[in-house]
Amino acid sequence: MVAAGNDALFAKLCQTLERSELAADARFSTNAARSAHVDALKAEIERALAARPATDWLEALAAAGIPCGPINTVADVVADPQVAARNMVVGAEGAGGARLRMAGNPIKMSAFADPPERNRVPGLDGDRAGILAEFADR
Image (cartoon, rainbow, N blue to C red; front, side, top):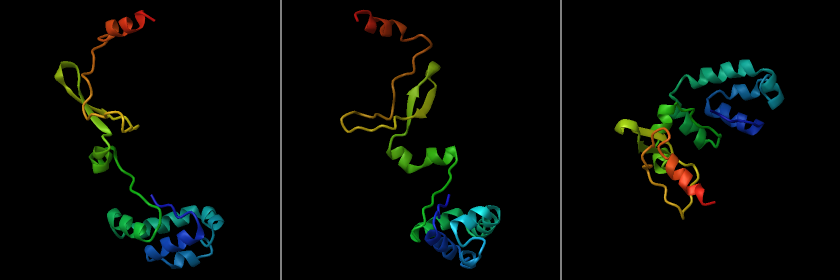
């Protein structure tokens, strides 16, 4: 994902892609012109990006100050070290002892623990008596 949403960023993008001539092309010289010729611009940018791996471009674009980021698969996201550091995938024991992985709580507060393991997942209707007892006195 690349976000070069103004003329200055677009010029930086073209320079970083080693396609400076695109910034001078009348079809792409302003935001309005780029919008009017989006299909042609997309083809030119894709052609330039195909020359190197995405990781190379992410590094080069970030160094140039151009907002960018990868578009990850679910597997990429789950394997990301930041996801682990933020405890965004947690485990629990499911029915029959099966291990489950699920989304962690995105809200983090220093006064509340955020353990990487959750309580065992109850069976269908497994917590009914406790829940009803909790509200019986209200």
